[in-house]
Each structure stands twice: as C-alpha cells, then as structure tokens.
Length: 96
Image 1: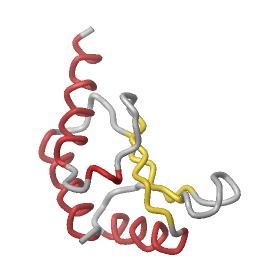
Image 2: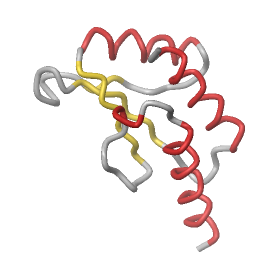
Image 3: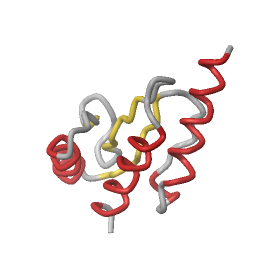
Image 4: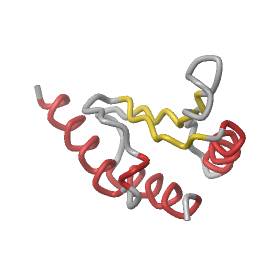
C-alpha cells in the first residue's frame, strides 16, 4: 500500500513537472508516454537522455503509427524525487 502511494506521488510529480502538457498522453500508470511525433526526433531525445544517465526508449514505427513516435518513461516507487525532477528538467530543456 505504501509503495503504491509513493508510485502515485512519483507519477503526479513527473506529470506536473513537464512544462509542455501537450507531450503527455492520458496515462495514470507507471508508464508515461511522451508524444514526440517524428521518429528521428524521438531517437535524438532518447540519446540525449541516455547521455544524462536516463534510459528512456523511443517507441517508433512499426510499433506505433507513423508520426506518433514517443518516449516511454517508466516510473517506480523506488525513484527518488530529485531524480524525477532532474529527468523532467532535461526533458523540458530538450523540448524547447
């Protein structure tokens, strides 16, 4: 029960800290897809996140339809608040 509450707080923290709300798909689960659109752009952002220490895979065709490529952020109850905020900050920077 306590872990579920922490996961819920982590999800809310992540969603609230993403500045461009258009990126967020409607998900209340631990998997938070960020809609990027262009497959190459999604790959570039995933690589930038990887260089910063975050594994956030790019999901692109044929797994999803053309022009609906996205990043898949997987959150857990073990993620620290500071790490979630750091990840969000990097996403906010690369999406500007």
